[in-house]
Image 1 (tube, rainbow, N blue to C red):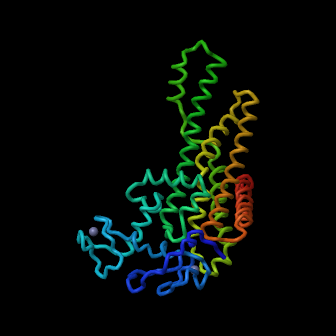
Image 2 (tube, rainbow, N blue to C red; image 1 turned 45 degrees about the vertical axis):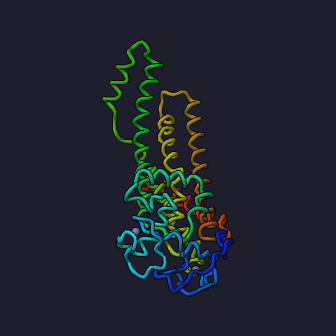
Length: 329
Ligand SMILES: [Zn+2]
Ligand SMILES: [Zn+2]
């Protein structure tokens, strides 16, 4: 079913008498307490004991004292109280700079670093592993943050294009008039708002939802083996966001060039071509990212086929959603 490359190191099973926290299969959650085999009896995932019971990495967050083996819930070195849950979470935070773990204390920095990591899915899904427990609410928040970014990019693209339009008009039709006046008049007379929100938002949100639902559908066989929903949410969130903001920005600029009557025809054609390329790139990168997640993160076979199928269903749903406003008119 799965090949976990980390399992090649084969750390010995822990001394179970000293393990005072629940140890479950990272994929299906089956209780592994007392087991010595490195394969899950339910879902056949191969894992490494060093990931599941990180004996040397469970340390006091205040003084760094090694906690494993303690029978009390207080650090003997600095006497601050601890829970095993916190110690395990703290270890994940040290390993991964993701927003999932850092949203409370380093929101901006971890959002940026999460985005940077998701741009390279191959590396991402070799760094983020099943035993790094996903946190659903911050993941959904991350998607929402990206959608807010798309909306801001759309609005700002519209505002910038008003300025560009005015300067272009000045350059072509009345270059003798003072430029500063033109810029000032444009800035004071700017309209906030963008055309086509309905045409943009509805297909985008439909595409996102359809992508998540079709992933759910195609992983049914793995769900029967115990695959948890939060792993899928993670693949979905990190799969559909990486190039979203960049695509939205280029779209909002190009839409305004394409619809501006003052520009020569070749710029309008170039804008359409650029938008098409951006859309293709976005769709291909999303499919590839999801493929990497399915293959390397949850260890699914035929991951590319599943990713392409899910993407096609999502695109069809988005295309349908984009004609709904016209049908209702
Ligand atoms: Zn399992
Ligand atoms: Zn301590």
